[in-house]
Each structure stands twice: as structure tokens, then as C-alpha cells.
Image (cartoon, rainbow, N blue to C red):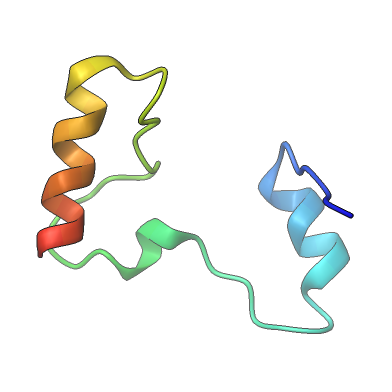
Length: 56
């Protein structure tokens, strides 16, 4: 079974009483990104950012 969430608030409502919920970008210290790049629909630029994040 899988559940797809469209909004952060939906995730918080379901899981916040069970676990601590944080956005992935909240761990970034060097960059001010607020969204994780979409690798498949973001074009070449999205792939470049992902490679940078993985290697740092």
C-alpha cells in the first residue's frame, strides 16, 4: 500500500503524532533551496543539482 501526499500539511496531519516530520531542505546549511529538484521534469538543471547534493 502506498499513499501519495500533495501537500506538506497533509503529511503533518497524518504523521506528526507518530514521528518528527521535517522537510528535506531543512537540513541544507549552505544553500537556501526550499524544494528538492524534480529529476525527471526539471530538465538538465534538475539533474545537475541532484548530483551536487549527493556528493556533498
